[in-house]
Length: 255
Image 1 (cartoon, one colour):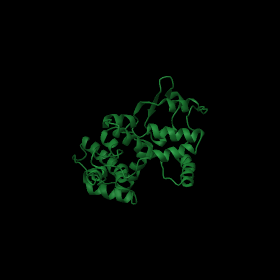
Image 2 (spheres, rainbow, N blue to C red):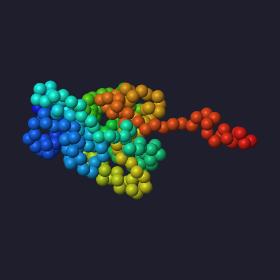
Image 3 (cartoon, one colour):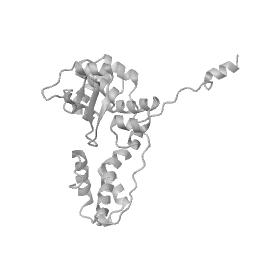
Image 4 (cartoon, rainbow, N blue to C red):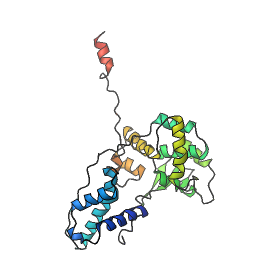
């Protein structure tokens, strides 16, 4: 904990892991102990969540212990998880409908999420001082990785941001946390009969960029993912019709 100084959420899971493991010497722990801890601490979660919250930090702790010669080094298997997330990307027509039925900061947030693909928590922490309207650049940061980067913004989104008055502390959006957004967003989706979550826009951004021909390095940079493998989970393949492969060929043969 002192060496890595983990984020608040990560520290919470590490404390739970320590409590569950008890005072066992690290040299006695094996991969099966990590799997058991994951199932015990996240009984109803997906394998992806169990890996992220338990097995990954537990592995990091044991690797650090090996560096200090408290135990021998060993690799630890993660639970099997699909290469691509099961969450579907936001559909353009769904976001278009949501934008048509919102205004003000709600409309701005939906537009921001869809274009930039930033996480909802990071978006709500956004400050006007990070914006350079003159050149359409936004300086963003990730609370998940502590990384920072610059995003190019469309003229339309720059115009929307420029017309939004900053709050006293400089924040772009009025909601303090994601729960404040979900309260009105869920009601809106129910009224319109659509399914949408902010994270689906992140999937849409990665998927659309890949379809446009961007490589995984560029996609990872855009989304502030630390490696291309993480970004790859957000890319959902969209194939297009192949020339002379569709039903049109059959119709030609039957003429």
